[in-house]
Length: 181
Image 1 (cartoon, rainbow, N blue to C red):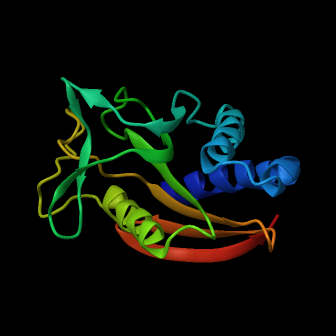
Image 2: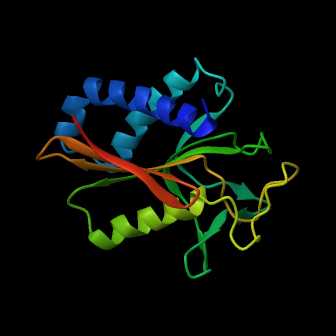
């Protein structure tokens, strides 16, 4: 099984358990941050049984390196700071593969423009490079965040009790589906 499928399966195991066990919390209409915090607990539990147990699951994380916040380059090449809703990463400890999952969560009643910004962010985060600007030599962390194996756009529709899930890899949308909560 390739790394993308391993990471996707890890996410799906955690997500399935999360949706079953946190149905009442989701239905209550709490904030995205609260929902991400709960999903973080499930990802943390599932990853402990895998080869990725040394990785960390963080909510609203932005690595500060030498006094500078980590950034990405958007589709126009502009440098913007990055702060994902939820990530699975090594916190810079594994230079060969620091970043595994970047997840952006929205409620279905959020603005269309904010949803599109999240999708564009996931495309940038899952790219391997951007015009050879991002290094990934395994010896040092790149200047701009990239190389997430899996990007997940996660949209919760409380009134319909469904979650829309989109998977991104290498800067592209690969797969999407609707999951009943």
